Image 1: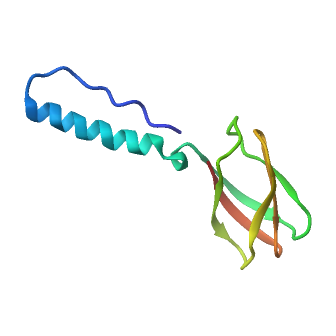
Image 2: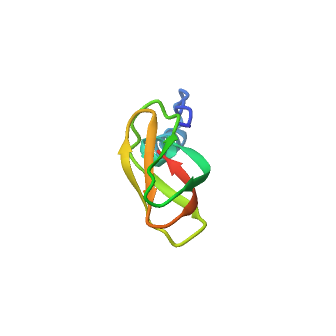
Length: 101
């Protein structure tokens, strides 16, 4: 979920204008980070050698994903990505949590 845009308010106090400039730049950097516009998917059970199609609900092709938790020492990789699904496989049977962005 993207943060709300930073709203400035008119003021002639130079220190307040500088503060608003810095805050605006700070929030813009957060807003521009692709990781912010993502969602978590929990308890994805992947059977090694059997690609699993996972609905990501982003409404666009994801820029990537991060495995945030795994039940085993397996490598998780995608075999396909589109605007609705992420197809995953793994080097061993594993259950993972993902952050898709």
